[in-house]
Length: 545
Image (cartoon, rainbow, N blue to C red; front, side):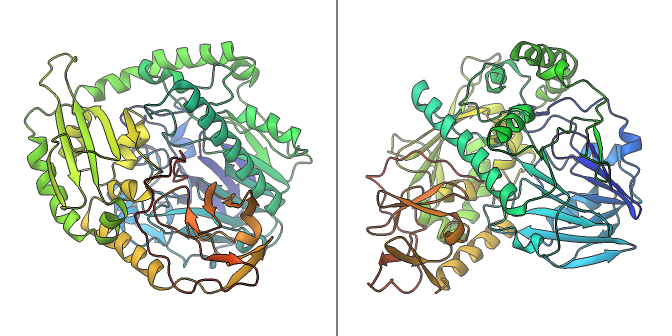
């Protein structure tokens, strides 16, 4: 079994039973903000696209690149399709020209002419764009797990299938927090350092749990070639940067006693049968990673070659013919009327300032309020809000022109906005903006209703406290991921926190914990999202990467 790195989360897995291509991404994503790092645009993609199977883990644009799929991946390939609650991924792949699909039930192993395949799908509203997934493969001799961005609460479903030889897992950040928040630089630096440490520690937990023979850090980081985003690149020696590169993570792993990690650059090949699994690089890593200066020089060269792609797209983003307020009122109004759980979870207004003043051809700013109490969209009129977003008017016009139903998978991940908030992170805000279609919204509403209607009854004891076994956030097993310090429970899966004295979630609205001191009865029944967070000010962002 041979693995060739193709950039970001993309690899080619070659076996005697067929060639499998995963998550090929080349073109700039999210309003031209993200590029694969190192650059993979010069690979022979027609050759790498000549495969028997294609796996696209989810619809995030750094994993699903429709332009590239149409041009370079064989339409004879059979798509290995995750079992997601909507048909969006299948529909999008059919639109790219693919016609052959295998869709196993999540967690079931299927045999495909000598290749055993299992896809583990995550389907909560916070998992990717309504779904994320991992791919497990075996050719009878070797086993590979490609977890990419997915964050299963435990890896036992994979361990039970036998020892894993190759493990591909995300280690770098893939979100907008804390960079876009309008906060003092010191505060953002402290939050960035905490997030970087948390994402390193989380990946280490996975690595130690799976105990694979070899680990391949993948699915990041992206790089940012636009000058207005250049500061997000990890070329300044800043330990609070949430986008560390592969070499930095591999070096960190060594300090933790792990030397099984291998570096996959675009074009790098490894053979799991070769003793020690040495890397065979097409490019000397030192030409990129020797220092911050060499890395910055590499990015500047890449900027010269690839930024024209962004400039060409940018010319079409503004749509002066669109009446933003009228269009958003017509689009969002029916969704707000159906968004009972989401609206109750937000319980206020979200201000969206679409800025145009100060730019060439300025037409003026538009200030819009999305009112989740009155369930309406209207002009902002100096109301107090807990969430405010600022972005270019042209970006929102493009979202409306394309009827983009997932603003998380477009505007927010672009990092081309700024944000303010009062109080803790509110998960429901971002769930709404990724569910801007009736199908998605109804799925999310049903999911929240189901969680509130049937809370698991099993409890466990941690220290002096008895509590529900599963994390209220995304159901991680607290016997494995829970830790208690100074009366606060932290679930290490995503870093969420609860005050044990009353079970209140300190990280987000709702998601309270059923708990009690040992010897006292644990509350029975669901914990319904509530609005009791005006005095909480902990800044903790979603782990929905």
